[in-house]
Image (tube, rainbow, N blue to C red; front, side):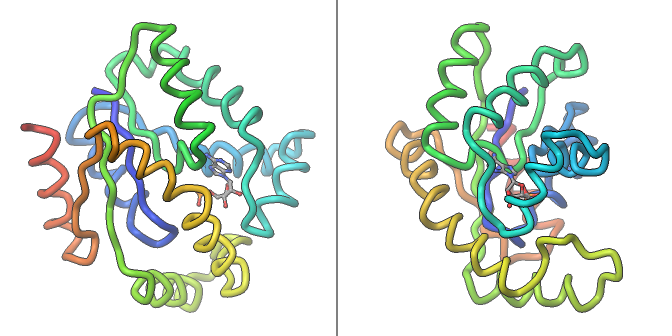
Amino acid sequence: MNIILFGAPGAGKGTQAKVLIDYLNIIQISTGDMLRDEVKSGSNLGKMAKQIMDKGDLISDEIIMEIIGERIKKPDCKNGFIFDGFPRTLNQAKSLDDLLASKEMKIDNIIEIYVEEDLLLERINKRISENDISRDDDNPEVLKNRIEIYKSDTLPVLNYYKQSNRLNSVNGMQEIDKVSDDIKNIILT
Ligand code: AMP
């Protein structure tokens, strides 16, 4: 089973992806994690990506599609995968449709974890104050930019899926277990 999990920064995508990979025995493909690995490795791509990520801006669609194209070829994707943090632009969503069609693959479930903006800010501010090893892009200024970019670049992706009746939404303001149950119910129906 192939799934896309959507949500603004702080909506709980990563947390829910971890629950689902165990439940469904599939893998998580987080473009953010893959980019952070590139940064750690010190590669040229990593150096370039760090500058963009530290500002909370988006990496180019070409680079993201290249990374995704290579990743879904790997044998561990055979059982299925969860995209976490991808697609983030309309261009990425359309390119993904083309890429999957060319491989006779498809996305089975597209799920939005919805959280109101005030609560997103509260959660990330908490994450920043509690976490010694917080991410370089977890600071109030950058966070604001990430949420703005979510609204300007990523919400159109949700509308794109909504228009073709492919989008399901869960209330991400509930207890973590309840959010997981709601997602599982969508997946199983
Ligand atoms: P995330 O961990 O998903 O919040 O991603 C962290 C950062 O990586 C983002 O703020 C972007 O700079 C970059 N990034 C991750 N995924 C994508 C994507 N699909 N398209 C463009 N940039 C991305």
